[in-house]
Image (cartoon, rainbow, N blue to C red; front, side, top):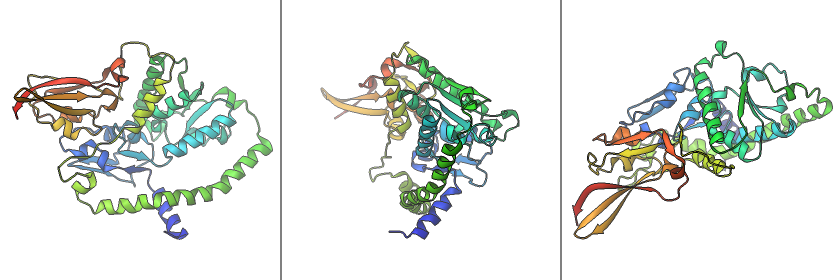
Length: 373
């Protein structure tokens, strides 16, 4: 077991990093033919480079905005300042103090200290927010959610504004689709209810003292949890690409469950009414396969990161019939299947069927190829 000095040292070294890269989840690292550059396009400082089976992040250039983490379809970029867990804890505390209002503020607005810091959760930039956090709050019964940022026209995160607007549109579209009356609001001012809170006096002082004292012990706990995490990162740097991706001896690349997508589905499933037939979204994708052009090479299935595409084979007379199973709920719209298909027989569409999204049974797509036993 590591001693306290080692734990604190490792925790402090991690503090220099705002994002942790999970290379095994990056579709461009899994296959060089994948064209996904969403994180690169979202980054305001060009701190990310994705090419030739590599994803590299310059921590010296990174400004901790979190935009790359919010747009990565496979969660290959993990935010650390703050982490999802820290942000959830922070907003839970703020929600209780603010008596029913969940407010997220960018660091620029937080620095103005126009309301007490205990009444909101701070993020470097609102581009750090994403659907699972906001929809999760609504699923827990939160009815007032505010995103507060300053004058973005003079902010170093100006490049992130389209991403913030896309997040707001996405989450409110999903809320409307789910029949919820809640809407996430964005403004350049804190909610009036927080401005009218007044002086917390001794209560506020006690809270600040508590969090100051707790910071040291929290850092120690975090250090213990992250010790093995950091050690494995060191080993990964020396590993081969095959080792990093966890490719088996049979040549298969491991699949993983899109955690945030599952949380969003859970939140939507608990809403009053999923109205409408279809919805346009950046979260899931629906595929179309040209059955005449497709030659079942299985490349799309091999490199699908979440197992949304599977092959099913069965005997039919003297031949083997092959079917393609597609699970919309597992698709993260990374577009790797479309990029990798050598015959360009597959297309990914951002308009998805709600019935198919919440269907437990996958869609069956017949493949024309039959092979002798």
